[in-house]
Length: 226
Image (cartoon, rainbow, N blue to C red; front, side, top):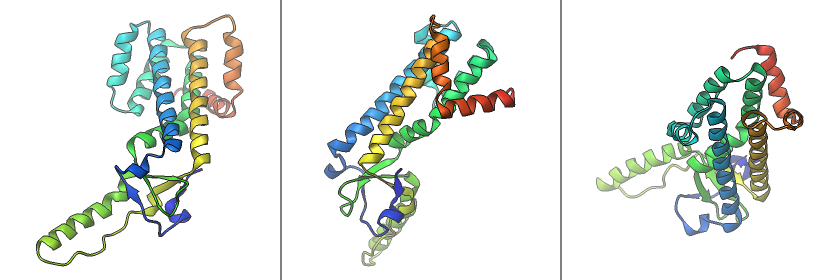
């Protein structure tokens, strides 16, 4: 599991943004795999919605991707599923989506957070929450004004190392494996609900044999309507 830089190397130098050294092919390939796998997952979800609402796939896909956030897409999926499906199938969708949430969140961080590296940790990349830069940027603006007014340059406030995470080879390996698991879950979900086949009961049981899916499925069944 990625650890905050504040624990790994509190005084490490961090270089964020565009720099040749950031784009380590060994690691960026894994980032691409996670992002691309989740693009396929969302494509499957678009197909799934179009099937159970009996709509045109291209129209449904355009509507689905027009929503600005993954949360909005999830809510659209749930709203349609709740109307169109049995309670059991609806709970299966909810359970699968909830089980996949950690890897979906990781994909979102890979896309929307800021990659970088640290010379002191050459076997890793670092990923910064944008808020880790906030005080640094404000201080840089203050320093610029000070220099413009004739004051000498000074050392800037450092990035918040508690919001910068260190990704090593095993962390990327786990991220790719988790994204692939999500893909397999969504593909099976599509077969069970979107394109039922003679073996769909077997595939349903395969989905429910996954501990995180089973856990959420049983919880939702006990709770009743969301």
